[in-house]
Image (cartoon, rainbow, N blue to C red; front, side, top):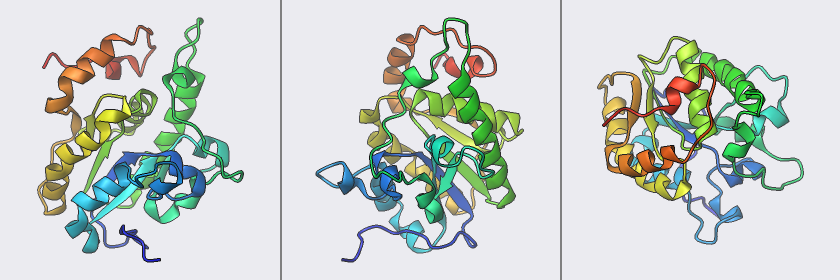
Length: 236
């Protein structure tokens, strides 16, 4: 059966990279395969592919995922926790079972203030960011909503000295806002793919800011450096 999404076979001509969160279909090694866990066969990757279809058909925009399952599949790997659409089998679970959603309880500081899982993912993402940067993309944009993923990615990008070049969109952690977030960042991806240079930094999505602000108040954990500064929100 012919698939209904575009999946790039190589990245050699791609100039713009969009990094998305992983999803439950990581366990089968294909983030597009939403039907493995959702009856309507739809997810963030399929929505992004639909909205960016023209650019995808021309091979101008590639997708990648931040995926903590690589800490399990490649504990000593050099590629890091950013998985390109051309290598999704890196996240495949040998058992075929869902890895589980990246709950904040995995990342939350201990009573002693330790953040071992957050540290591990950040270190792995530093490797991933370096790898992405070596590939020479003109623009990298990222939309990752799990709190632990966002904090780790922001810290990794900053540590690599790329926060003034990479565009990190901040959305509420709850997945119910994710499809809306993808729709709202689409014009920026188009602009980048057409050659407009976007100023790097962290940008909350305006329409979702009230939800982000409300959600952020629910987190009472005191985070150590370097993640603390990325947990706070701008005043508007």
